[in-house]
Amino acid sequence: MISAGLSDTGLARKNNEDAFYIHHPLLIVADGMGGAAAGEIASSLAIDAVSSSLSQGEETLHVTSLPAASTSDKEITAAVRKAILKADTDIKERTRQNPELRGMGTTIVVGVHLGDRLLIGHVGDSRAYMLTQNSTSESPVRKSTQFDSTAETAVLRAISADSKKPAAKEDTIRRITEDHSVVMDLVKTGVITEDEIRTHPLRNRITRCVGNIAGQGPDFVWHTIEGNETLIMCSDGLWEMVYEELILAIVKSSSSLEEACKRLIHAANEKGGVDNITVVAARFTKK
Image (cartoon, rainbow, N blue to C red):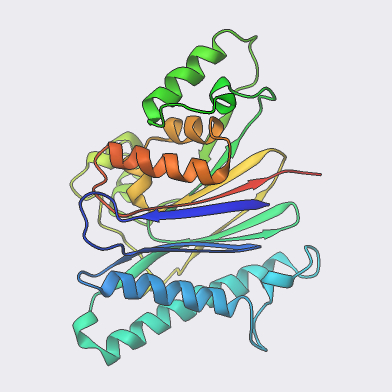
């Protein structure tokens, strides 16, 4: 696994309430909320609690040095769940000590890479996508030393180039997390379509956050890495502005993960940048 991450305030906010963490094999994205500085505090507390819980302490699982086959799926999932619940407790305790922070919380997406498998734990509406690149030839955009970094240009060039090549199995992007939000509940009950999420008046209402976890707690997804795949973890500042097909085209036509993160954030800002934008990207290649 190779990885990169980037966060940006966007064009409409004065401060950045997002946070991210990368330390192989652990990846985290958090999107704080609560107004004033509360969102920044919540996301920071969550990152600190999860990263420390999963890398040190006598009673925690040392995922940062764990051999791929040395423990069971159940144990790993339990350790990540415990870490996220620790973050929930820490945020609640900080709110108890500082009543002015009442209502603060954060989304979280946690990725743990173990051998040829990936565990994703998540709360809220920050997302994880898996991109599979089936084509073997390089995009002409990737070979160019200078190019227009806007998403629209990247897509047009990719389509133009692909139209001249023999038919091949398409590259794909798939959302592997399910938002804990009012609008996703409406999608599941058939009231609205997924395309309507981005414009629905209730799109910012989440049903679960770290700092107010009740009942089910975090959800988990295990993914088996098949080959040339790229994980994108992001806050809603990215996915509400940039559609999946655009994310795929930008990642595919970028020469590095660092460049992909920069161009994804640029694309979100080009579309308005109405929220903080955070992207963590990880590429997996089988030996």
